[in-house]
Length: 291
Image 1 (cartoon, one colour):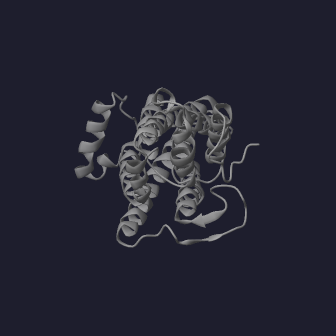
Image 2 (cartoon, one colour; image 1 turned 30 degrees about the vertical axis):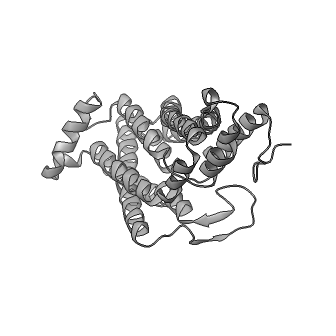
């Protein structure tokens, strides 16, 4: 019988992979600081159902590659991998830094804050992005940025990573298949992130505004969530490096990972997606109506 809450140390290969897949699906749909803010931001920026699904796919594809690699590492060097479980604060800092810089690029803040202009030009050349214009954002930019974010965010740790790396991966029969638990976990996450991204893109696309206004709203909300959400990640990550916050939070009694223990990670997932996004959406709509 599949036990997602506390998988046993003696499972068949099929059960291990099915458990990893289902855990990935739970990870992709529950509030998680390593998925929700990023997928939401790029899905909004795509302003279409297909674009949102593409953003969710791009993010989770890179995430899947990273988890598969770490699963293989866990199989051959479990002790070294467990040391990474204490590096979540550092991941917050790195993810926050990249989120903020991505927000700078999308909002084109370099035009208004001259010392930020170098980042826009460097990022455009490095990722071969089409330069943003005043009326919209290149459709390809969100996908490539989401790929970069997905790989970085994959290094985040938590209950899911602990199960995949310390319970599922070590049970693989050989190093040739040690990557499979992480791979299937990533696929499960991908399934739900594609659905989540598509839903966000669909909601944005149904707004009763002109195409130019829709592009502006999408770019504004996407950039604001990435920029200010990134700053929140930076602040929390920096604080957590000084004062560990892993034990902060409270227990809900819900036996679902990401919902059982409400801590810093939960609020990092919720604040950018709902609080910052709501304010940004209101701001964008007001500006559109004034035009």
